[in-house]
Length: 316
Ligand SMILES: [Zn+2]
Image (cartoon, rainbow, N blue to C red; front, side, top):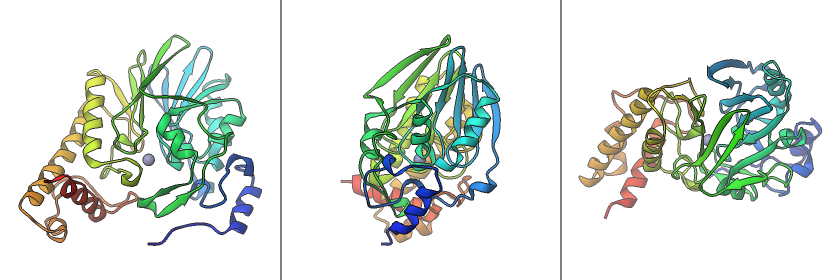
């Protein structure tokens, strides 16, 4: 197993580059959150799209950012990587001169939380589920990236956390932040902008390719199906979805992705029940005919290997 830990001189160099400060991270070992992703920051291009009502989606590198502009301030869902913060702020400033009052982390992964310290320094309060704060407050290993990340320091940690759900009423909009069943991680939140009728699902939902679950941080494949059903029960017929990665989606898109996962699950479960080995299951290509393609942190083969392990483990 290869563990990707940058040597200290390189970390010092990155700190000197100015995107994060040493006080923002407390543990000596591991990468700073947001590093270890193959991103050429110079080449990143941003795109702002109006979703509905007072909600926009900002794409750059990393997770899609939800931008809510109320009468008295801006509310962001996820913040991508630290080196992009200034450019993200400039994009948001084109919609509103008001301050960014809140930043919600849908979960702890660095392509969603890397700029926490920068936004906090600029005055935003950071909100997340209790489990996301817990994971960020200690060194955390992400198996699918074979990478150990450092603990966040107090400046970069969520300062407002919740257990089940919380609501904000901002500028005439009711915003519900709701803990979803453990699925992508054990700390996933969905953010429902009730008046604009938009829901940001974080990485519970990706509109393209195979789903991603962080199995050594509480995620599971069955959990992704359960969480999809949870959101389908929550949303309306016309609610629009901002995915963690991919395109603005509809209820029908989520149903399709959910059913594709269920088909793969049923195929692998049948193979497990028939006593097939992992190699036999992989050879049978359980995602055949379905629109999964390599390109995420795990290959399709590795994803199938993880699903097989999960289902075989649950079988009597
Ligand atoms: Zn993620």
